[in-house]
Amino acid sequence: MLTRILDIIVSCIGLLLLLLMLPWIGLLIKIDSRGPIFYRCQRVGMGGKIFSMYKFRTMYETPGNLGPSLTPQGDPRVTPVGRVLRRLKLNEFPQFLNILKGDMTLIGPRPEAPDLAAVYPEAAQEIFSVKPGLAGPNQIMGRNEEELYPPGVDPVQYYIEHILPLKLPLDLEYIKDKSIFKNLKYLFLSLKVTVTGAITLQHLTDNRSQIYLMLADAVLCLLSFSLAHYLRFESFTDPNSQKYLHGLLPWVVVVRLPIFIYFGFYHTLIRYISFDDIKMVTKGVAISSLVLICFSFFFGLVIYGYSRAVFFIDWFCLTTLLVGYRALLKSLYLRYKAETPSEDKKRVLIWGAGDAGELCLHYLLKDKQTIYDVVGFIDDEPLKRNSRLNGIKILGDRHHLKLLTQLYKIQGIFLAMHNLSEAELQQATKVCHNLGLETKVFQLRATVSPSS
Image 1: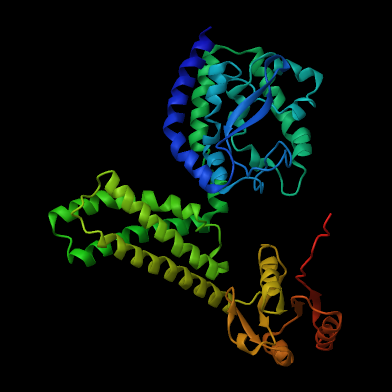
Image 2: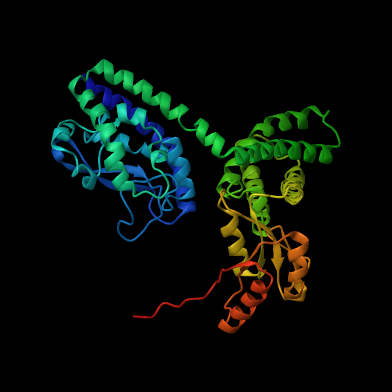
């Protein structure tokens, strides 16, 4: 009885919080991808009864069930907003409705998908004798369970063979010795790990360079708005304008950074920044400026007498700063890379500075353990000479190949030319072999599926 009263009280509080978050989370989900705001999935409840569990939708909508019922880290089905909701565990909030209805309880074994519940051993069937819970010993121990899956494994098989044997004893032990006091303990521990587990040390380490980039952007947002204010009012001494400046500065960061994250400012490593990334930065700053203007006037952070020219100047300054220092960082990286030869890597050229060549470059660079060091491109089109493709220089054409091989100590070459004919392929391969270069073919071909 006490457990049910606790369920009702906490679920009502959770649903009130859900109502406050719903307009904002719902808007982000709808903007991010097509589909409903909520997602209903089938789960096994007490006594083996199947019920519909509610979540915020975090995956792309697909016709039918696409892929396994488990979601390892890096699952391509998860949307950009969905990744944030999962990391913060905000996608779980609609389950308070399941708790209020009585399908779930606050503390208990995590509700299992029917296909996974079917493989539970006979000794673990006792787990289905109680209501599944929003939180519990396994949810605390495995707060970021998706990170446990090694790359490339079958998630269902790995879960059954490696993760499930660790979870079942914890759930069975909880069932044998559950109490209201233990539930309260797990409730507070769940709140703690939900907050502290959102950003782990491993997560910070893996995304260190992108976090530095985000912090630099936050500083530049403050600097740009302060500069715009100074250029418009020619001082920081006016008491009225200074009051609005101090009131706006924190919101400049709070409003802009989520928009920057949404536009993917931190999905591209500095060394791979391209013209498309620059366009994305320009677009993101423009939209965040519009949102900042609306936010400022709607919430009374500024009055209509405050010069709106400050926001326009800020947009121009911030766009220049963000684009400029990204270009500078990439330039410094490429210069450092050029001055630091990789003795343990094969120095290669890419023959073809087009779509196939760009894909080949990304293919070679995306692997941190790559054995290749891309020195440059060669291409027979004169207009491309001395240009750069994703920061890598086009050094010459096929007639310069022998000289480039000697000059840069080239060991191999990738042939990456769009729709290369068999005769052209043989001719290019012969030229490379005569120079003693290891030759690999990377072709981009257009394919047309037969109509049914």
